[in-house]
Amino acid sequence: MRKVVIIAFIILSQNSKAQELFVVTEPASNVPAGSLNVRLGQLLFKEKFEEGYNYHFMPELTWGMNKNLMLRATAFVSNRNTQLVIEGGSFYTKYRFFSTDDLNSHFRLAAFGRYSFNNADIHQETIEIMGHNTGFETGIVATKLIKKVAVSSSVSFEKALDNKPNYTFPSTQGNNATNYTLSIGKLMYPKKYTNYKQTNINLMVEFLGQTINENGKSYLDVIPAVQFIINSQSRIDFAYRQELYSSMLRSAPNGFYLNFEYTFFNVSK
Amino acid sequence: MKKIYNTYILLVSIVLLVSTTANAQISKVEIRATGLTCSMCSNAINKQFKKLAEVDSVATDLNTNTFVVYLKKDNKLSPNVFKESVEKAGFFVGSFEVTMPLEQLKSNSNYILIEANEAKSNNDVVVRIFDKGYVTEKEYKKLLKSYSKTATYALNNEADYHIKIIN
Image (cartoon, rainbow over the protein chains, first blue to last red):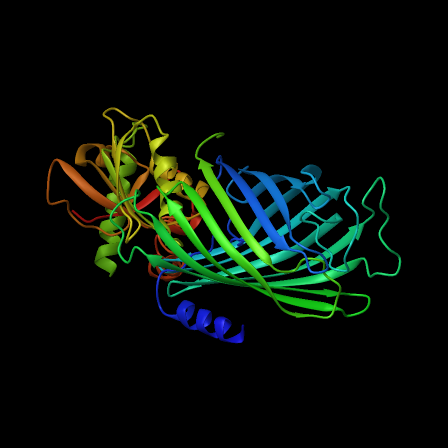
């Protein structure tokens, strides 16, 4: 695994055009003002303690309210308990509060917040409000583009609440955590643009870590990804998440992401 | 330098004397956007321009993120509309050139010549705007020093455009 990470780093650190439309994390940049972005997110994760995979379907709507503020709503559908059911949903907002751009570079800072609700059983120590826990998360993200290489990093605080109505958060587990992410992306194709119809191929690697504040239990995952941008308007992401290190109980840490995304420009003013 | 300054004072005075409220009719703008490298980002800017009813067509160089926007006749758009379009898409303007008839330029007091130079043509002229938000941040910081004698430059009045004739 370490080799994969090193190779990914070498590929991505080569001087070329970079991308920041990451698969799992969000950059400090927002979607264009007035645009509506539809994402059909799918996750297929391998169960660690039992046979088979669990499937999560996350349809998502993102609206650029203005150039600095973005709003998002997500629904969580999963078959973790035998059949596909809606388990919850989420609201997310991101505000870009700092931006400095130059011809071949930019640096941006944004603050974000998310509130999620979920009625599923609580089955792991990991706090994950994207499809597992009820709770909230708030943090800041910085994205830098230097000589066509984009790097994005975030730090956030995440707190889990009871998964109402049936599941209270176990008092034996730490209910809040610090999350940290590092994402790097690079455009592989085309080398030279000719028009908007060209399919863009991006390679990315993301690192996601969490530490439960109360007891210091942690994990670190790596997510290599390939992304296709079609017609400069839609997106297909394919990624694989692999646990690098963990000292906490996780029921299904490794698995695949497959996202479809389409942007409707100028839906509102 | 002093001579240029005097010429400038003279020009401003003339402009102020013949000041009218007429809109300068722009036929074309050429904008280089900053802070992006992806075609989807570029398309966001493209779509912002295209939604304007006064826009006839947009030509894009995706490698330099340069947009040439052709406008319909008798439009009353001013440069800040395009600047806002770029910013709405989430990016910024790095350079901004406007093509308009020389007559229109002369009759509009909002266009302030920051350096005295003459147009080569009597018909359409190309001017570059040097105000904050129309150049890169680095360039603006330098220009603030260079144009410290131009009283209106540091004011950042949205309706005023400090320009140089480049063609």
